[in-house]
Amino acid sequence: MTQPAETPQSVPFPVLLTGLGLTQIVGWGTTYYPLGALAGSVRDATHWSDTLIFGAFSASLLLSGLIARAAGQAVDRLGGRKVMLAGSLTAALASFILAFRATPTGWVAGWLIMAFAMRLATYDAAFATLTQIAGERTRRAISILSLFGGLASTLFWPLGHWLATQWGWQQAFLVYGLLHLFLCAPIHWFMIPPGTGTPAARPDGGSEGLTGSERRQAMAVFAAVLAFNGLVFSAVSAHVLQIFQSLGMATATAVVLAAMIGPFQVLARLAEIIFGRRLAPRELALVAFGLLPLALALAALGGFSLAALALFAITYGASNGLVTIAKGVYPLALFGRRDYGATLGTLTTPSLFLNAAAPLLMAWSLSHFGTRFSLLICLVAGLASFTGMIWLARRHNG
Image (cartoon, rainbow, N blue to C red):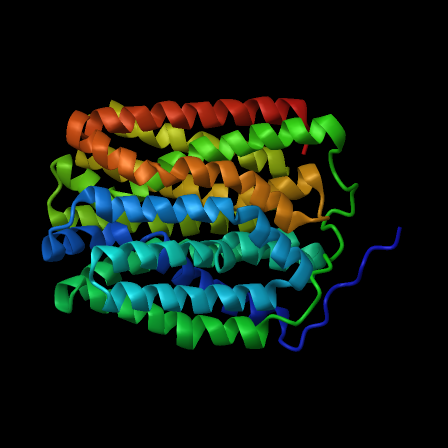
């Protein structure tokens, strides 16, 4: 069967990839990461409970899980241009609601609307877009796009902290909305080529992947791997400053430790770009998912000292960096390019359902059991994820 040709482009591909990279920095920094820097300021200014602050974010993750498959199908049918533009405009709307409606109702409404931006303007939509236009460059393009996205926490945790300190948390969300409206939306509309969503040729030129019961079984296991892994990242990312502070770190030190995570996401992704061709997708996935329990073990074995927490931040960041790439390229190896957006949405749905409760559960665990015990629970979840990945890698040579 003849493979469909790549989508014509009016913008050179490196320029397109750079533009998409900028939108991923803003997208992740303003949808998934705000509470890591702003939750304390919101709490101090409004006296709202953690149940409300983090519960709204959890509800947003839950709703994003409900629409994940539909969002992927939309990219498959309509192409990334329309879908990602809609994501930018939705993110701007949600940010403006959070900025101008400082009430519990406004807070919840803003985060529920933000759920659509999470699905339409971040990695899943961007990766599906790349499978349609990148052809043989898909794996490398996913790695490079992830390289940009890894800067989100490094830039937006300190930026959010500074904006909240200087002007307040509402003004921080106002800035976020303006970035989506005047930076991300034009990039998505003017740089992504129009198309019907027809995928480009599979990068490795291989078969269309697993079928039948093998496909269903592999999808179930990989979805569980993503779910347990994402549970830990969602819980820790939402409370990262609080975690470091409760382990005895001063606020400035905690901010520095949190900011270390992003650079090592980037360094891990850069290493994958340079050396990744030596690794099969399943080997990359094993390394990526194995680093998370290692990071938590290093923190525990080091007694949660400053040096141990620095090692944790380094390894945790590297794991998160590589997991993002593995999440994009391993499904291509296992399941093929056809309906890639819907496949990725299906794989992501259980993760988002489980992760929806993670920030709230972590807040409850931190207040009732303390930071160290809470991190040990995260270690168990990380080990469960890695065990599933080992089983999958032994069963299928993707």
